Amino acid sequence: MSFFSSLRHHDEIPKDKQIQDITLKQIEPNSYQPRHEFSDQSIHELAATLAKDGLLQPIIVREKGEKYEIIAGERRFRAAQQLDWNTIPAIVNNMTDSQAASLALIENLQRENLNPIDEAQAYNNLMKMNNLTQTTLAQNIGKSQSYVANKLRLLKLTPKVQSYLVSGEITSRHGRCLVGLSEKDQSRVLDEILANNLNVSDTEKIIKDVDGYFVNKKVKAQEKDEAEKTQRAVNRIPKDLKVQINTIKQAVKLAKDSGIKVKVKENNNPDDYKITIELKRK
Image (cartoon, rainbow, N blue to C red):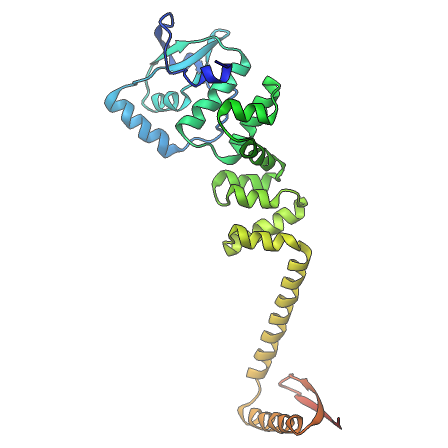
């Protein structure tokens, strides 16, 4: 059985590992904890369960000087803190740094889904600490190599994009679409995703021609702005003058329909309205 395989069975307490009550003030969070954010609601719900049923499974710690560092069970530790417990049942297991980091990752993967960035960072740390390839890591944690590779790619994203992955406002698939873009383009496309609630397919269409998309968007915005300005100006023209203008435009249309080439230039200034018509036979 490999080291990682044995870690998956850490819930089986060896007979020579006695449970002891350790003061909460002596305990420190795991420095290799892959989860950087804990749900307040999740901790509150767990605290309610502990208050009702007690702690059914001790946390696992290792000695660190005069204190103890959590290896597994940080959510239980935080819930106990919320309940103002003085002590908590724990098993002391003096693992190495790589063993502690590996166990923390496996526990989090089994108990509650990590956000994509925390998971990717945990995989990256495990590979460095244990000198593992993506393929070996994937085999050890029961994932496919492509799954691990896709998670690690997310670490190439800018901090801004990563923050929206952490919050769950965009998905990992959105994130993978943005990998490879410049920092500026990642930011621009991210803003489009958030503003228009774009799905992955829509995002991929933008990325095929990022510059073209935003140039076209700018042109459309300018055209819309000009159209609105024109409409506002037209709306300010006196009603009786609008009737005359419409009559002229109808005449222009009839001329075009009869085969005459017509060029019209219109000044929509309501205070000095001008319309210039040039007629030329085809």
